[in-house]
Image (cartoon, rainbow, N blue to C red):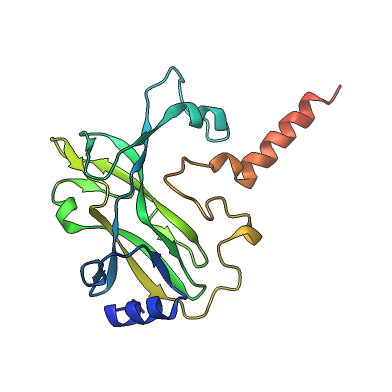
Length: 206
């Protein structure tokens, strides 16, 4: 069941669902979603001499991105074909009986700006700001201003509360993140175990 504005205001008032800061409830709480504003930090992807990115090599991922900070009142220009990681201004806390999905605002979609590629799912138990995957699919640059409403969260109630929600007990990589965060895919168990086996093979005299 998707939460309506009535449900959202009730859960926000109870405090188990947190979206902070909300400066204007009337503006940000929509009929069945909450508008999220753009933060000031961006991670821009740079062209490098790396022939390809290996997901299990953190140093390559770090070399591929550059952090940019834009003050409120200034603009970040998203050029055609760009892919940039941004962040919501708001920090969220999702209770164990809800899941959230990140959606774009139709007004920006009509300017050919999308806010996520695949990471549109926010797990029960997640805490932190939300990283946005910003792309310009159009033919003209688009100016984005920190503080503008750029995306929306839709909340769905689970049939039963999660017994293993997102968080430190699961080793969740992005819990309590502040600002946009580059991929931590190198910490996935399939890559960690592969690296450990490779190191063991190097030390094996046979």
